[in-house]
Length: 167
Image 1 (cartoon, one colour):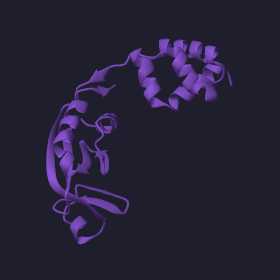
Image 2 (cartoon, one colour):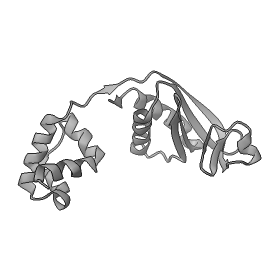
Image 3 (tube, one colour):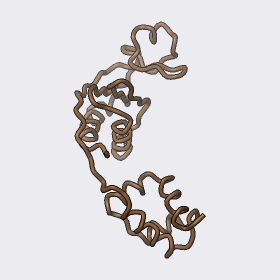
Image 4 (cartoon, one colour):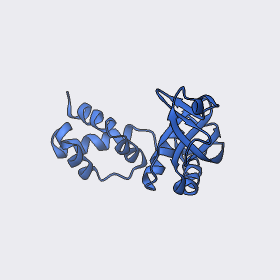
C-alpha cells in the first residue's frame, strides 16, 4: 500500500482528524507524527496529508431545523416491563427509556435530525463533559438521556450543536 493510501486510511480511522483537515486547522507535521505508527515516515505522511486535504471538500456546517424540549423523570428500564410498555421514548435491545420511571432527563429534538445531527450532539455533550446515558435518532426524532442535574446544560448543548451540524 502506498504512503498516500495508508495515510488516507489512517485519517479515516480518526474522524476528528478528517474534520480538522477539511477545516484547514491541522499542523501537518504534528498530525503525521500522530499517524506515524500506522501510515509510515513522518515527512512523507505530512506531504500525503497536505495532498489529501487539498482533495477534501471544505468543512461546512448547517443549521438543523428542529424543536428541542426537555422531559424530566425518565429512566432506563427493562424492555418489555410494565414501565416500558407505557409508551417508551426509546427502546433498544433489552433496554427502554420510559417516562416517569427514574430521575434522568431526556432532551428531545424533533424535526430535520439525522445521524449527522446525533453525532454533532454527542460530540458537543462530550466536549461539555455531560454524561449521556442513552442516545438515538430515528424518524425525525433525536433523543439523549442525561442525569437530571445536567438537563438544562444538555438542552443548551443540543440546541447549539444543532446550529452547526457538519455537512
